[in-house]
Image 1 (spheres, rainbow, N blue to C red):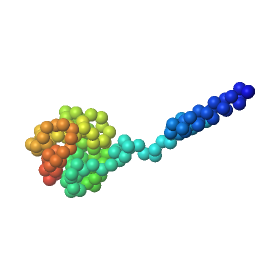
Image 2: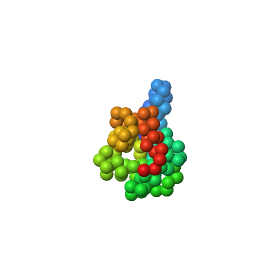
Image 3: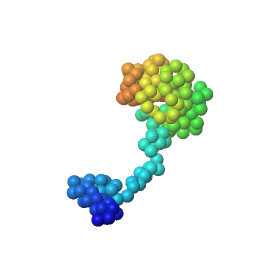
Image 4: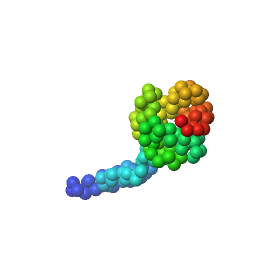
Length: 151
């Protein structure tokens, strides 16, 4: 038996064995090099960056928050009542500058941003509860109350 024929036989047996134990991937990889995985058009992180997160605020109160951020020169962009990445980057810049440590200015409303917001809300007299990075009902109520009017 030639070396080429032996190689084909081994590859065929590997494929059959792979199929027999239910691992189609093992059989497929014995025939050809694996293809690179297709990259999704938008990653989960990109989606969260693009998402609007009003943390329970209606449009009017979200506009109040954006108005305050703009009045304090943190550039939240258009006051449209949609707290998207521009608004949250402005909030993160504000929270960082004022010593609340929101972390990276990326427009993502993560635990550091929520913790910093909770500290800010508690400091201005709203009861956001223990700064734990969770935007629960108490934090949302404090954020709602704070944004009842402009700054």
